[in-house]
Image 1: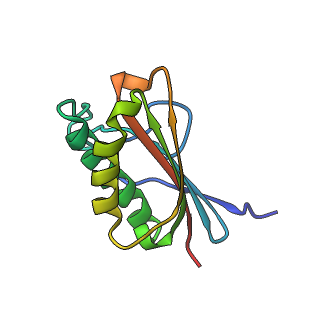
Image 2: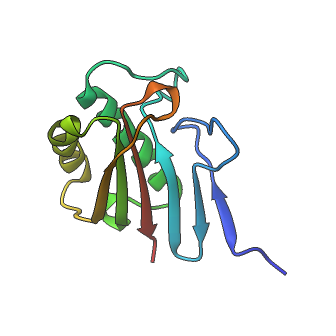
Length: 129
């Protein structure tokens, strides 16, 4: 029986730091793992302002979407994880700019901590049909 799942992996986004994939495609749905602000060229966290962190997260998501043949216009749902809800407005501004005209459904939650000391993580689901 042929698998309906296809692993998406691109060198243009950070390599997984655990037992997961950058994204998994099932038919026309793409499930992107959460991205933090790791620069794929260096493997190091971008740790300056929350805006710079968010810009790197959006670049990483874009790279994964493009590797699967998609764009932000294909994204139907995102979840944003913040370690400090006071960063909501700054993250939201960069997120909105990065999305362009796309307006997917979204949830934003505050969490106690994120991997590698990240302050923001974003995951998404896209429809590639």
